Amino acid sequence: MKTEKLTTPIGDFEFVLDGYPTKETAQKLFDALDFQRACQAYLDFMPAMSMYSLLEGQEKGWGCKECSDLVVSADLLDATPLVLTGNTESIYFSCNVDLKKDGPTVVEIPPQVLGMANDAYFRFIVDFGMVGPDKGQGGKYLLLPPDYEGEVPEGYFVARSRTYKVWIMARASQQISGMGEQAIKWYSDHCAAYPLKDGPRKPNIINASGLVADTTHPNDFQYFVNLDQMVQYEPTEAFNTEQLGLLRALGIEKGKSFNPDERMRKILDTAAKTGFGMARAIAYQSRDPEVKVYPDRNWEYIFVGGSHEFLKNGVRNLDARTLFHFTAICVTPAMVNKIVGAGSQYLGAYVDANGDYLDGSQTYQLHLPPNIPVNNFWSVTLYDPKTRSLLQNGMPKPSISQFDGPEQNDDGSYDVFFGPEAPAGKEKNWVKTVPGKGWFSYIRVYGPLEPFFDQTWKPDDIVKIG
Image 1 (cartoon, rainbow, N blue to C red):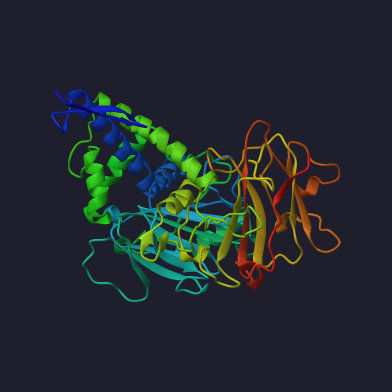
Image 2: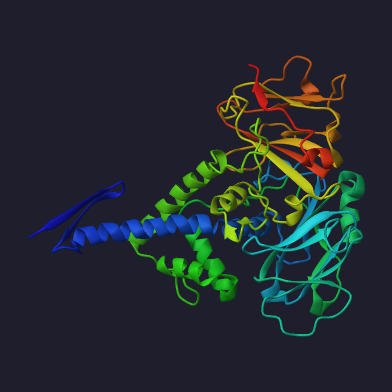
């Protein structure tokens, strides 16, 4: 009997009678196929699972059980909760909206904020505030469920979601909202969320500063359990047929129980852990030629390719989508488009000037040239590469911003230092790192000005000095 043998990176396979796989080969190939599909599902549905865990983390950690439960970081965000690349300067507010439970929902937005609504697949719905239709004046937004067919009242900025679950987030500068009790009162006076059918009601403000919460998604079998729960809750139309087919091949199908056998559970668990590794490779060793912001620096884009939908010429950049959703939240054109004097822009660095990973045992210097081109504020923030959340370094916050009043050089530039100990005399310009642990940094510019976009102003690379 003629036997065909095939040697591949995933195993050796045998085919008999000029084409038939042996039973052993067929099983090995099915195992490989299920594993590959599961790895791809992990990557493809990361936006949805990040949102699932964000909403769940806010509910379990901060008590966001109703849309009117508004979380406010009145005393700024610190490293206590795990929140993907949050910033330590803005006064955030957020809430969880469930359009299946509440129907059309009103969100009253304060003046002079930046914010957005994202759906359960972390897709953009609408902007709020200075880059939204209210143009920074504040206003009432009406969010409609995907299947809503009733009348739409006047007097609202109206947006329809493709999913039932929606995340609302906006942030104000410290100068606008104040901090502490002042921020709580400001948001209580200017912000609300409630079902349209119930009419206006005062928000229940929750000061999340210092409260524990974990909004990061799991990276084991539980990832697929959560994915099934999301699929069961949301309308089928929220996904395309190819996505639904991929999930069906893994045993996830709307209206049916997800009950994988021991073989499939093991494959899914291993695929999630492998996908976690793939995501780290995509984020921290990007091979996309468009990831670099400057040809002579190691700063990288968070949104690669200049599209909040990760599209170019009508084609999805899958790795760009993974890079963003593995490391960040908040999807809006305002984080990508050139909006001089408004919006926000981000630069990420995972390596130093020599291309080596940033090491918490070493000491580094970052030079920021004079005249940082911002209309609002700038900051430099450190994150943990595993949790992608604020680096837990024992300090009140792992960041430096203009609000901290760092010392300037004579020419108006700044030098910022990172390391386990502050260089002598540089304590005001230093962020502590953790020996034995890596870190990465974001530079944020809120209200970026023309020199940022035309790159006549650009930060130096992070340089190891000890």
